[in-house]
Length: 418
Image 1 (cartoon, one colour):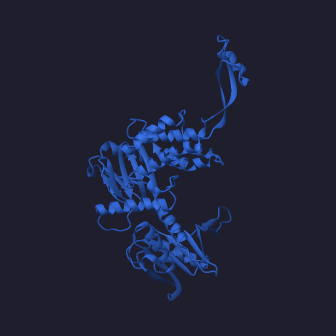
Image 2: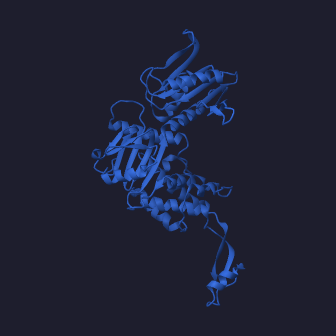
Image 3: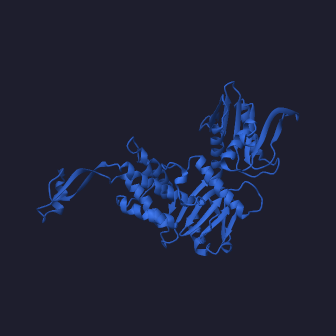
């Protein structure tokens, strides 16, 4: 992996202390403590002179310091090769589930080293903004008002009297104009300015500078979640969708340091449990045999009190065949030792067997353990015919990994192994 002076690479569920890296100073830790705040954060918890990361992966940028948190599906000692492999796998998983979408003809059009998620997102954003002017920036009508030397539109009489009592040659008017100053461009311009402040990659800096010169300059805008709710894309503006998605990810996860103005925090983090669930789903959908249908998060009502809301059951993935056969799957991003699986998970799968009339239920883990098939028991202590499988898929390069996931579930030999 490309080495950087201000770049730290760690794994999920690991500790990072001040003494571990020269660039991880007390000031950086203090910025993370402020970011953690009173309410806490799902990404990490505070420990003595450091932080302990949770089941989230991605990037934290504090000022000029970048902390990359990678997934890990085994308990083997960490080697530098592991960091390289898991950095590639993480980006490949994000690409597979649709986290990276661009208008470039192929991913080979990206010139930045793909070892760093933050750099890749930054370049995707720059690539999208460079693409939009080629399509033509959209203009919109908007209401404006102000002093003019000619009467245009309608006269705002009260403002005209208060502001132009001396300047008889002026008119305070309200009128409609048709230009590029609208919410879409204001949001994208805010994202571009943020990139200009945060980017540490020299290869991107010149492209960002060129965009700042060519992209229409917009007034400052305080971007919130509500800002993006107000945006409605249509046939003319749907081309802005990918750039807006990246702008949303960057702007809403940026936490400026208002006290010193130096240790700003950008948190680009992904829940590894949700990412694994989505990755397994898209892998099965890609290699779905004929006659099978796949659906994610198939929710059904399970229990309702006399007064109150209905409680649902919702397996991660449900596979149904035309002849009525049902397979219910739950994905678990965790390391387990042999048969030491959570009793809560086993109870949940027992419910799925009955409730969905499933022929098979299985828990899917990353790892290289052998497949385990265990029987449930009747209340009298005798073994029943109900079975829950524990399926393990060892991490591989993306295409092979996706093929192996389908092979394990549908009990067939991967094409690469034939």
